[in-house]
Length: 141
Length: 495
Image 1: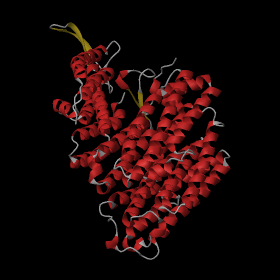
Image 2: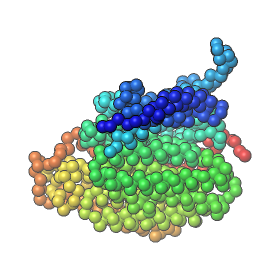
Image 3: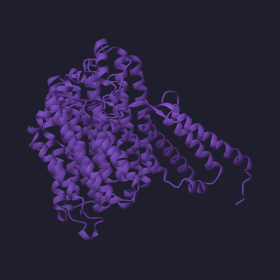
Image 4: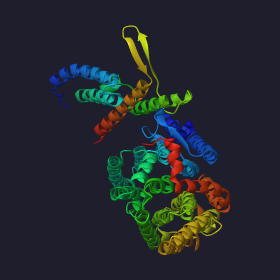
């Protein structure tokens, strides 16, 4: 097979992926009080991975992400549900959330909320689902 | 607050997710799916006990009080359906152990089964219209996967229709929720019920109610049943049985909930339309069941007759009618599961579903034959089996409100149903034995236990109907007096 001449795509991707991934993480943490959150952050993360798939072949990306995205989805939903169960353990309703302010080094006064744990689950589930869909379509001939 | 209310939803969900992570451990899947269904059964039993002695149980998710948060509500009606779901689901699952095949097992059969149960239980427990939509979707997406799992040509052909029709229904569901929200400004069922009763059920609210009726009828196969016979005959037996037992019942449950809790102020319009649709489904279903000479087709058309009959009880909107409907609903879940399982075993034995090619099975399989006979009597409502008590109450209800035509159609179609299942019995079990045991395509080994258990259950439900009466009565009382539901959820909150 002829090797495609995609030097520009590769050069742009290498830079763009870093920016998109950073933005995804920013969106994820912004979501607690501003637009953003696990769903959108996860989608942006999946967009970066998709760009990598387009630029490089599936096998070399697989070598760098050596896990099954279906399992990632299940783990994500599991984390989200279990944070809900956490409320039950403290004799509160399912999906109860708590937050408080802590003085952390570097960050200063920071709000830590259990809702972030739930959001991590959502983000993993979204990344996993999006990647499973894209990889299933790409394998379809 | 009672966290037990959420358990029938999250227990199967969590176990299903863990199964996805440990995909190759089939034995672990089998053991834990059985344990999960036993657990949800026990939990629903405890919930029913609590409802009986402490009234309707609620849970406001995340501590956000109704009507602002999402409420989960367990009343006796949901409790009875939850318990039946767990029991029927358990036996269909055990049937699947011996019949579904390793290929499907490795492709997430058991997790999908549990996700289906998650969606069904969620639909029974939610007290929020949008949440009901979400639970419907959880159930439907699992059912899309289950109906296509295996990828046979027939499955794919039928599942395209199934997916398309359900996508359309879900879309209309969402639109109807939006209309309802724009008219009333709330989607909490109890709050909706309160507001609709305050401002009265005006023309526009009845119009929205009709839209919901259309959506749920499409899912419950009430009148709009054209998609059902094809879809339910495509998947393997265990899946077809759980579909026939549970999926249409969720649509029926939604119709009951909406038209006893929220839209019950104009029964002369809404409930009459339900009655007419029920009558047409009974007639057309029975005609279909008589006309075909194919086991699968006869059984799927019988599902439609059952749906029509249950909703005939709602159409009367009397205590008798609803009592009959609940008895018949429970009976129908059990009986549809077992008759699909037996039908599936017969088809697996002889390798065809055409009645003309089957004959004389009673020689080689006497127990199967007689169990089919019992089920056939039960499905058409012969006393003392479980179908009888429901039919009596529903017919009494229709006569009480003067819907003689509805009661008459119900009784005539019962005879037609009896004829259609007896046709299967006589054709496949009587006559000359043309198939010796070593010529059979499969054996009944390993699949008889769930069938026997469900047959015992239908006899028990018939003879022990008296013991169930307390619970059914509480369910009917809370359906007929929505104020108890509203008070339990809103806890005195008012606009």
